[in-house]
Length: 481
Image (cartoon, rainbow, N blue to C red; front, top):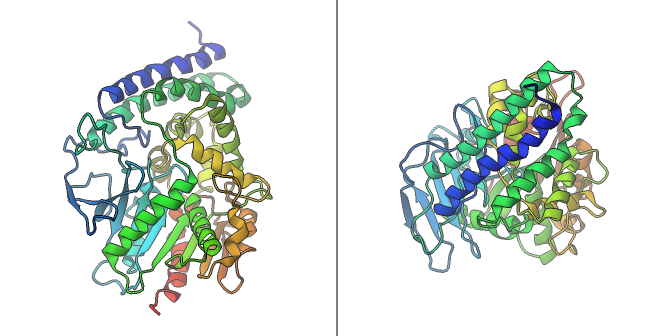
């Protein structure tokens, strides 16, 4: 029977429904845990080991957040250590990947915190031994930590009280559920790709926003069975990042109690927002210096493709959808971006410039780095495209209004071909910072190499050009006063 465009298009929701029904029935009978990533590759993000985490728990003070150290970390965690820290007012335990400096590395005075972009996990900072920003910084002597905020990567949530308060969901349980959903998405994408390769079909027939409406609508029917993703940007800012910083200080014990921090994309926005809040409230940030990579508080004057968040936000708000499954959507779209007829080839350009990332590393990044995003987070981030820039959840506090009050050195880096956070967007925030404290650098040359959004972290030239620049900057402010 000949397959028509309409038939294939209308089959998508039913196939997704079949996968999600299987997925969430398992959730309902097991742990009520949302899948963190939907990457499907030969090496999925979650380990298939049937051995659960063995946790060594300790707390230095009854009033401090409960913290944990994993003695048997899953294979996917390529860090030297995996730690967990609990956050006040929520059940999530945040994962912290730690990279210890080798004995021959120079001595540093401050630990280094790495913050990732929206809906991403630690893998972006540690793609492979030859492309690992985290490992590079540890090799330069920095006690390096990557934070995975609530809902991302290996961060975990306890099971329901009536089941067992002391029992945490295992990597294996989550892996099986994610794999079921992922295989269905990959199968759908392959069939769609095969169909399009036989026909001359305009990409407009598969309008992205319509696909999002359809997919999100089917996810909504199942998401009522699981715990709500009910946090926003301010939860990261006010709860997750401070809890991680306090824990790192307790572990690394810097003499002046300060940290160095680097944020990519939303990670950098978090650092800017933190400095703005501290300036407004007249308190110390307890940061010695920061580096932001492709970050801004205001995107209104740029041509950022982050405006794609707007069509994500509208259906999410209209349907009261608690989450947008970004990882699953990118996994479904990836085969159409990397093989004929390349309907979604523009996705690759958003992530990496031409010839800047090895195809296998790009595939690993797309299939393993992206997670489920709370709708509340997306809705708050879209305020960065409105007059006045990013604001808090109340809509009354504009973060850019107080960023000029910051009092620590900052290095702001942009990529010349970054379509998500173009140089002009970075400049919108840089121009508000004290001139004697900010250093601004754009990477990329007219004749190449060029830098897109993730190339600043994982591009093949970053280790030669970007990383040394960051080390030199942080080294100048690593002394203890």
